[in-house]
Length: 252
Image (cartoon, rainbow, N blue to C red):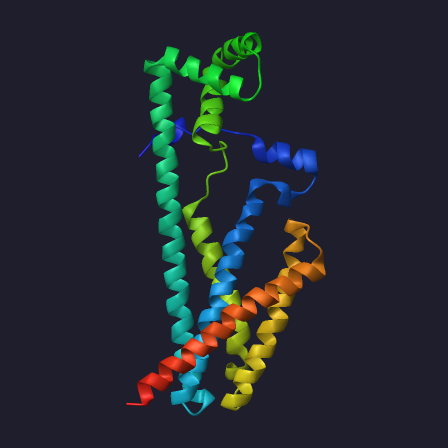
């Protein structure tokens, strides 16, 4: 693993906030990807699970403990899955930064030529590129940041924290689990609880689609309807699979 001290410090988040005036314009805004994914996963898995167990368990008193166990297992799975995948990605980037640092120290001429080629590809003339090379390579910190961003494609200071992503994903999954689970937890009759769960999920997905427009800047109605349509298909398939699985299981 790369030496943590090799990770260059970037003020990119400060610049973005200064230019745009909103915290959500910083790189932290990309958390929306993990949040939406985990919420949608929670909705689909819980709806499918409730549809499945409602066939074999006649009362909500029996279904609720099973639902809680399913929710806990899902939270653990998505936490560790997100943590490990993010950790692997972070370690890969750290390895690339360590390699780039070594090349700057031991192969400076090759790295200078790479800077020149990058600048030419950006549209600079040969003379302008040569001036740019002299300016960039005059400061090793600037040089390293430039190579990391332009060669590796990583903006310094924007790597994800595995623990943060794991916790955000697990919390978002729990948020998605609650709507389809709530009617059963309130003790409604099974069929009524399942119908109510579907209605609540539709309302929840529309609200989620509207809420994410704060980041995406898409029209709230379009975003809400799109989220309902895509989520509805996913949940519908989950319901269908849950029913089919139990039909196959209990038809023997």
